Amino acid sequence: MAKIVNFRTGRVWHELHQAREYFTSPILDLLPIGISVIAKSGLYVYVNQTHAEAFGYTPDELALKKNLFEVSAKEDHHTTRASLEKTMDTGEACWIKKSWRHRNGYSVPGWVQCKKIEVANITLMLGIVTYGDRFRPSGLDGIEKFNSRLV
Image (cartoon, rainbow, N blue to C red; front, side, top):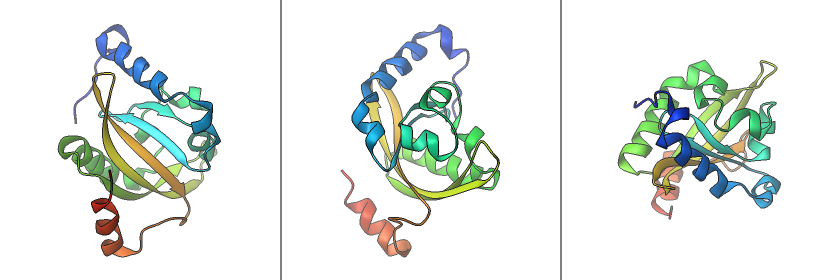
């Protein structure tokens, strides 16, 4: 996976800030589902209020400060990394069943629908997140059917 080295001093940092501003909207914070935008390195570029609060943070504590893997359950790192790379490299959308680690140490299970997007001249991954078993696809056939309908 590509790493952004010293990104705060270069052009990439400016583009990540532009991308974050693109998503900053009070409407997105009102949604009952989590929204996250992630750079290929795993850095959170944007998170809405619902996603941040699901594991005890504010959006400002996560966006452009924390990496996805810092708040993911360790047992999900391999699957999450593989799905992130596949989505970013191929553009293929996916569903990931995963758990996050709440700031207080407990596990927060959920589902993420991932889709590659281009914003401010940078390739990012958009994640639409539900928590618990809500809206989970029913088996592999459900995942394939859902992925075939993604825009």
